[in-house]
Amino acid sequence: MMEFRTHSAADTAELGRKLGSMLWKGDNVCLIGELGTGKTAFTGGIAKGLGISGYITSPTFTIVNEYEGRLPLYHFDVYRISDVDEMLDTGYYEYIDGDGVTVIEWADLITDILPSERIEVHIRKNEDGSDCRTITMRFIGERPAEYERRLADESACG
Ligand SMILES: Nc1ncnc2c1ncn2[C@@H]1O[C@H](COP(=O)(O)OP(=O)(O)OP(=O)(O)O)[C@@H](O)[C@H]1O
Ligand SMILES: [Mg+2]
View 1 (spheres, rainbow, N blue to C red):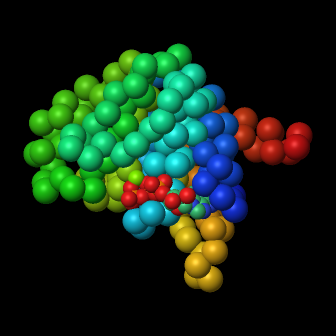
View 2 (view 1 turned 45 degrees about the vertical axis):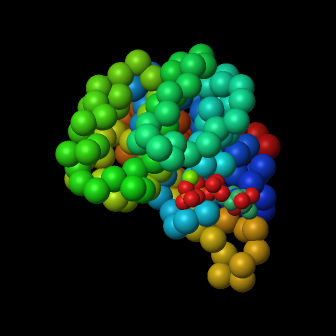
View 3 (view 1 turned 90 degrees about the horizontal axis):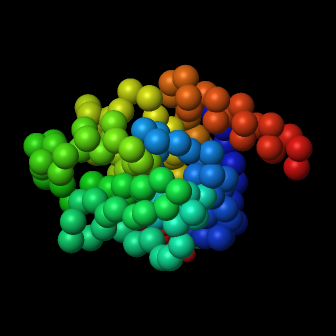
């Protein structure tokens, strides 16, 4: 587990970019945090790390948006899904086992079907209402554990 503190949306995106630049096909990132904590900001950073230029917004009228980069990015926002079937109808399992990177906002709403190997990113606001966010990453599985080592090395080198 790693914990970070960010002080702006740009900071949060930069952390996402670091992670995104390491990711490889089949990797899944699960974002958990209340409304407006910075899940989409973090996803924008991941996109940048995948070589995707342009603005990332939460999919509002669909459940998933697709972007082309060094690898495809499949960006899910499951806030509005009503049940797991609706999720499966999107081709969910093909996405998470697919050729790209899948990012899921509000992953805590679909805990029963989360990929077994995943990077879980928890984002919390500060009590004081400032722009400070506490971001906790859990690396679950063999390849995620490798990313954890690499992120730790990078931080250690400044
Ligand atoms: N440290 C920070 N990290 C991320 N966002 C921040 C931070 N400080 C302030 N913000 C602001 O908080 C908001 C985060 O919006 P964002 O859409 O990324 O949140 P979200 O978690 O995806 O929301 P939703 O639950 O609606 O999908 C933005 O307005 C951003 O500018
Ligand atoms: Mg969002």
